[in-house]
Image (cartoon, rainbow, N blue to C red; front, side, top):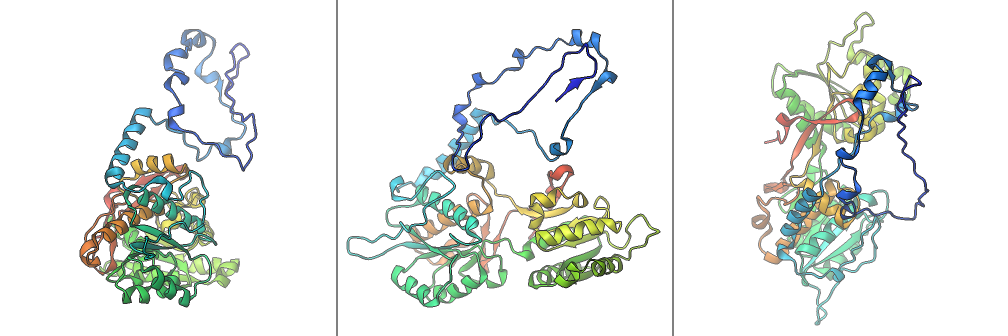
Length: 472
């Protein structure tokens, strides 16, 4: 509600109400083409008599009253995309994708909805009963990671739709259930895949690798364990080492020298602290100190306070922190939200002491945490992200994430490789993902378009362009 304080001034009331309640089971699909320009009021249709109002009120007589001011935080005014620009972007993407179209829509289990059938409809045989040119995808279609698996499957569906043909089929294997090595071996023997996409989890990749390696089958895995990559096994996951390298390198290039490292006392925490120390130790002028916190230490608040006070060399007589000019916080969402406010309590002001984080910082709760304002964290931004978002939303109606883009690229690369049937190392070397822009190089290394972002007020982000693609 916006109102003037004088009784003689007419009140302008703006309300936003939902008159009907939508059932959770119902779906509401909005298409861009249904919003016509003639349905929107032009500026010329809104007339405000400035002369009349100026004679009745002064600037100091106006009061803006918001009943729930807290609810206004973090809200951005939605941008209206011009219809013509959207059509041009969509047209460009469809033109790119339809270059090699040869598969019919009804040969795919493609639905415009959040849910897709998990029935296997990609197991095809020819007239002689022989299975040929199969791409085997290991995805978590059920279980705790199913949202990532289903998103990736949707992306693979689109890649087959626009680049596949009647001799190339994708067969999905659900890794959300227990994996039996005998079943895996029988699966490889019966299907004879030409290409493998997935899995996400490290332990499943360890079971698949020996079989695929013995048959010289290339693997594009989404695992973020870079220790498992090698010739013929490319890692598309965003590894902890890559995340840390991007933000530490950015900090070093901006003159930060004294680093504090705070992480959980587990395998993940040891990985990110070791990667950080390796980078920081590259110059003698740089200094660092670290603490690895166990669950018992985190849950014991007095003990945690004491550990952090010693680590930060907290002095009650000082209003500013002086030991570190940069502090890395690595861990789960809960760990970050536990540690960050305590650092601020002990005089670590994120506006003056640079806080560094991992991709976990891109969560809404963390971005809106006041003690992390001006913090840096890494993200992967796809090269053709804007056009692909429109294309994806036109097809599925939901949001795009990294696995949408990486999954689509994986499908295209797998189809092209299966068509060419050449040596994997020669075919995939230096190839670029059409959507992500990732580059496939020797030893299973995939160079990704990594960007460093800075958290601003109300959770907004700024791209630190000088640190984009900082990795060599």
